[in-house]
Image (cartoon, rainbow over all chains, first blue to last red; front, side, top):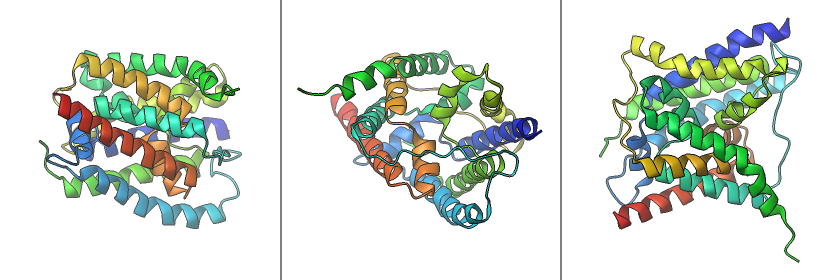
Length: 147
Length: 138
């Protein structure tokens, strides 16, 4: 019961998330690259996307989560428990940023752009999937003790 | 060059956060796209079917955006090497660093997670530096 109702909710959330990315034009790599180009013709749009999202998210999250013992249509919350700021976080975020800066594409916009039919998007998603697949080897390299 | 799109940015940001809050309050999941995508490999287990539906939602979302007069970029002006190298690094980085722009940047900071704030500051910084270097070289 709880399982089945979660499916249409997930579908609706995916559609809504994609609409948000399209309306804010975050699906356009040029928009991202111009945001990151702070020494050139800077386009601050992404700052407003994130700012608006957070100004909305933070208060609602705090108010509602206090009252919810469990999600409305599921048995428990799946929230990250790791609070460590470690080498993996720093190295991973750095690599992601470099990839994002090179391409102007992050995972959400890549998937939303599939419908545009550009083979570059499909290639990006395959490259990203392959990167995820080999990420465990990178994890092992990072966590090797330096003795 | 792209101009600031203030109204659309704010509207889009609010919609992203409504979606993320709905997924969290409704079924208890974080809207981290890299994590949801990576987890697709677990979908033979029925507790993971929601991931498939969420990704399908993302894929068909342009059909609905058109109804409101918004569409995808007409072309992806990114070179092939940038697509391949960028995609690879985004894949590795989001797994090793446990998240991307949505998971860390919106949901994580939204939950006031110090870890996500640090991750977001780092990936924003390396992305800005990367763009600066790429632009200087070309």
